[in-house]
Image 1 (cartoon, helix red, strand yellow):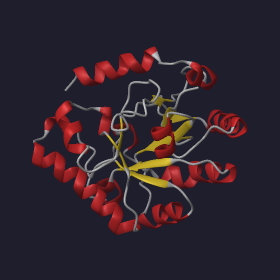
Image 2 (cartoon, rainbow, N blue to C red):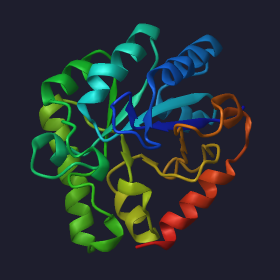
Image 3 (cartoon, one colour):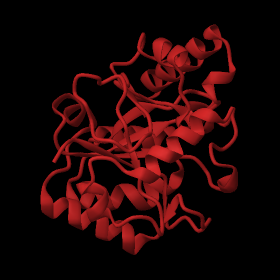
Length: 232
């Protein structure tokens, strides 16, 4: 099995929609992954092209309250991509359907980081980086990394595109600051290109996890990624 990165957002948060996975399904995923023993830290999976990495976007308090205790109980490694402006309260929610949900606090993020959670950068603003100039992209990426370092004492090694929207220009700037860059697309990892790590979104009512892990590429993810890159 090649390296694969799974993407989650919310678990049992009460908003409905595909990004809010119910707790029984999520628990079943974790039990399946824990029993298989394939879950590894993101950087290790990206470098080796083997194993499964778990990633979570947007740093809602739902992660600290619901998700992290379930991961911690099973000893599973994970990466949380943090839009720092959302945590600071200077920018709006990354999900328009979840504007009533609070972000994690910096205290929660520090505690989880101390307990083994990897924190990755998701920019400060969670804007579509393709729509801003080079200086704006650079400032958004650098500012997020600086804030994470200041608040947690740790340097984020990984970066995730907001809204999974990328371009050659955005990628070039992101690579100046981060070793590992996470995107969409649904394929398996090519360890020769750690600056472009594909992910598979695990969504409610979607393909069973067992099948997602076996496929060399996921048509739904491939098509969704192409649509995202076509839209502004």
